[in-house]
Length: 182
Image 1 (cartoon, rainbow, N blue to C red):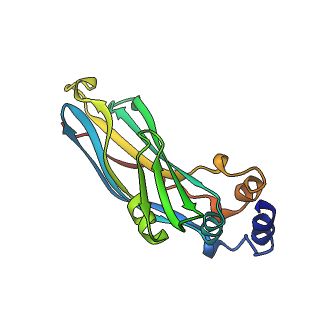
Image 2: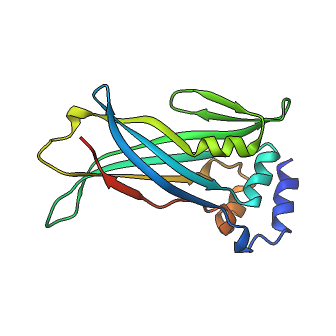
């Protein structure tokens, strides 16, 4: 199965950058809920044709949403105080022809009738706890960063070399930053 997928991608002209995937963080903020800082974000996933073909062929895609908090300092580099990641798996269930998103931290599973609905919901990051309110000193300013990316290391072995050299597989939003609210 993977050999057929790899060959089809190889011969489809994978160097065409117009078909490249894209991830964009449209908005993100943090708030305090039950003495925990939580993050809400809207992320737009535009998967490349190669990634969508692989998904439809049964290859699970793993998405990492990375969070970081830095304490701002006036004359030197900002000090990193927190780094964590939330991992999601997007896959097609072959028997029901439905799409499943699994939060690999909480094991929550959401099932969708269409791929478009699954991708839309994947971009809705809701109340992800990042730290207790007491973890941050009120005397300092903190910046929160968020990025979303497709994890190429989690792809099956035969597909990984193609994903490394093809721009259509490199999907990362870059860091979206904002000031931590208290």
